[in-house]
Image (tube, rainbow, N blue to C red; front, side, top):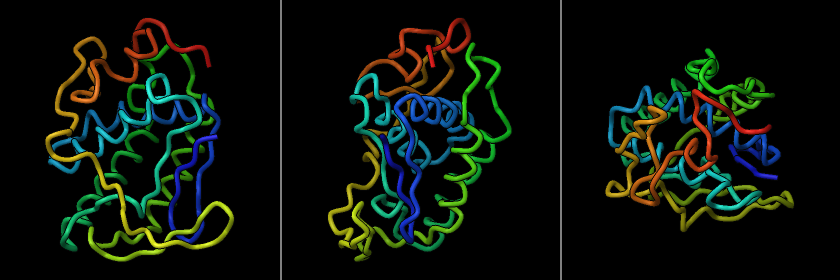
Length: 188
């Protein structure tokens, strides 16, 4: 199981296949909307959720663990971007390109959107508290943040027309599946 955590104990748990589909549809949307540095850093975070590279059952992230920006305006812009990405994905943007029907993707996207909507991003240096899997709470100090500006997903995979995982590795989430987003999809 892979877990994406929100606030107030909210979380979205998905199977490995569900996570792969969730990441695929988000990458399709984020690649269309990314314009600002934070957007490309978030795109890099998505590429790090590729289980074909990172390993099955070991991906996911918590909203409170991410760098949303230093000012209220930066945090609002970052949250707005993520909500727009989720809305575009919910509109089934480019879902006709993979040859598989994204099972349960709409439900995952709606759940994650509700988590983001309810989330109040803290300043990057703020001491926040997150819930642990056992229901406890721990400080979120030592937040990992997003990949740095020099690690932002700025390159585009020409075969699939999505942002790819450079500089972490060559290829996008569709390349690592060994299939084309437009000519054969993963067995899910």
